[in-house]
Image (cartoon, rainbow, N blue to C red):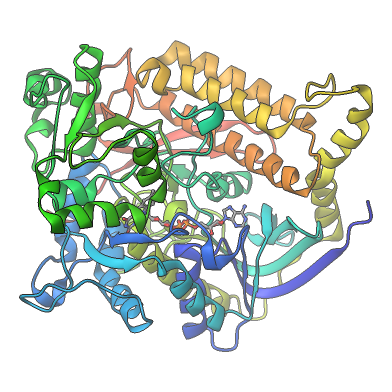
Length: 610
Ligand SMILES: Cc1cc2nc3c(=O)[nH]c(=O)nc-3n(C[C@H](O)[C@H](O)[C@H](O)COP(=O)(O)OP(=O)(O)OC[C@H]3O[C@@H](n4cnc5c(N)ncnc54)[C@H](O)[C@@H]3O)c2cc1C
């Protein structure tokens, strides 16, 4: 196949045009008036990323101007929910800027619900404000489109390029167009990775006919992590996966139900069950169980224990709230604006929440840095806030020079959500512009050899298929290649069974992890033989490889942290207690790009807010 190569030389390359990426493109233009700013996006920025379908609430808004919350309050909240461990400098930095981003969304036309009494944004909870958010994504995409020199849609970025004139400096990225097959080479002085979190690394509850129904976006393939890991960037808290209690089978969100509709949960026999597990949880985590609000993982823990005790299903009691026509409307609209599939599932299962209390379930684990957990790259904080170990020159720069992150890509900043991810994009872009200005005339050197080597590697799965296909007369099982879907199911099975997924009730230990890591290594060899039938499958092949690298990182981190810090997210059976004496710290990893060996270390947690 003759493959056309398209070159683009630019100052800033934004990889992924979701919430972080659109924020980055917008802010890069503000500070870098004459700079060339390019966005490369796997889908189409109008409807891409976790916000593609729209949202019903902006989950991170301080409301400082109304005297509601201060950034310090948000740091305390996130720290508490994450059992003490966040990057407080990054969290504070995001929180002090997030309100201004939300105000921009309103200026750009996003409709906000307002309180009839005060005229201010209608609160769903302490941090959440309610929006008519179907068009949230097209609105922020518009801001990015007006700011960037060019948006390349349908480009799956597979690797970062490295500058060959200086060690440990990024030089751009490469990928391919999922529709035309063209090979795209972006040579850039700075790269902002904002390619989202990871779903489908653990086996989902919905398999077979329901496959693709996941909580986090099914197209979030861990690229933000894999691209950074491949380049040698340090990662943090990758063990801190998230498990969500959600409406069964459709993963419909419960936030508005708890906070606005004031619905509550009970076991199969109509009893409240969280207090049943109070002593059990206290024995594992000590005083953390008494914190208010109760950390999410600990509420999950009670849910999981109650199910194990044979008193499931767990129900959300909706029958009372839905008698109020206003609340009934809000309950349905909440799904129609954000998770239509939950309404469809209920319709298909004859569930009308006015008359039937729907079931909840705990999800398979996901990996992300912007929602309620904080996996991601180890980034520098801002110079006015960060202690020495957290600061190396440019805000949100990873441990690779010129490589920045935003949103799910950045570790340590839990509870940023959509608005906080956009804010992080802006912060990263401002710093990236400064980085480029400081480079002055210094050039980035990317040789043809590097570009051509990647080209060969990227398209290999097409060759594997074309050559191997002749060996079989029908079906999908080949002696010489593996299809992306087959690889994905193998990966999900290993992660599920060995690294703490649903089928083992989120339990693992050193021996399980050891074996899991071995199996993932074997898989890495096997994935050299992935076969892609067409360009869409080529994208699937690279998504799979990114998911594998993300999974390896999760497994390594889970092995390193010898305690159960977040019961309800996962359990280390060989260390069933939280251990603040030895593990009140952040975990860091680095995979050597040459040897592929992982090294692990601890980093201190600095509490900069009292
Ligand atoms: C079900 C669900 C409910 C949520 N509810 C809320 C809510 O109510 N309120 C709220 O504020 N937040 C909510 N969030 C969180 C919010 O959506 C995320 O925090 C935010 O989207 C993260 O921003 P991001 O830029 O890191 O990732 P995303 O917005 O997901 O963007 C990542 C982008 O990268 C692209 N990409 C991925 N891989 C590649 C690649 N290899 N090459 C090129 N491009 C690539 C993707 O297509 C995508 O456009 C929710 C998320 C989910 C999934």
